[in-house]
Image (cartoon, rainbow, N blue to C red; front, side, top):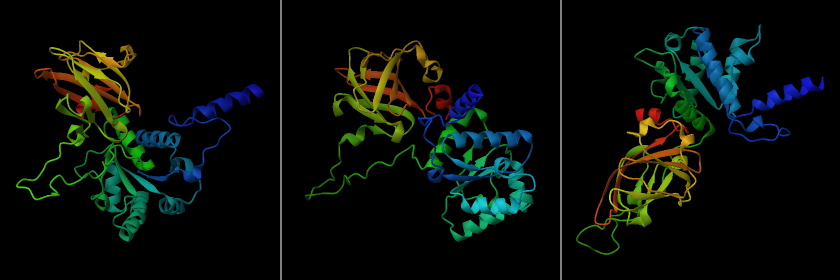
Length: 338
């Protein structure tokens, strides 16, 4: 009997969310978890299973999901379940399959009943972002029902892009920004004294590219050799110096950088696969033209930078293309496609 209880306990512990480190004697406080109602149509068993797997993973990641497959028993009151769930939820996931859109637009069945409740909520607060359209199994031209046509949606139609879309959805539900808004800087054209021309700031703001990918050219003899790419959790403060003909040096000294590695012999960033073979033991790397530096930041994201050009009298002007793997993996083939 003791062995049986021990096995059950281990199984229960294994269901804890992957991003929460918690001792077995602590219990998750569901009162602080965001409460999410799942609105979808029962198109077929495969679609129901997909919704179930999505809900299961959200629960493991700290989201209190309301799902009919869990919360309605035989003989249960469906209208009461819908009304209570929709009005008591913090957010609503509207899984917009082709069938869901058709039923919502024609006000059919349970989807039509849920649409009526949600439409009433939108009429009371037209600026609400409570409803998140999730596109799945949908080949229609109108991907969302008419009553959600002005709402921004997330697209789960391709299984290949599930991970980045899921990460985006999870962050939205938990209220965590991936791309953080920078602090408002001064107006560079504000004049303290009369001048014939406005003064333009040459501050460190010139050495920032907040996008997830791009091409950068900068003089590493300025700004202490630092150039920042990305923002929020995906911030990388890269640091460089010239190192002779056709080569540079990259450093992991910045506070946002955890480690760096040198990748040789690849034609493009999209070819990066298994990163376990790359050595991250040194604080500095010496890449040449065409070689790639792989960076990992303190939030666990990866950045790949490929040296495109080195020029200048002291090789101080560096050009590199860069890609951030926004799904927190090193799958750069998928990241480059975005």
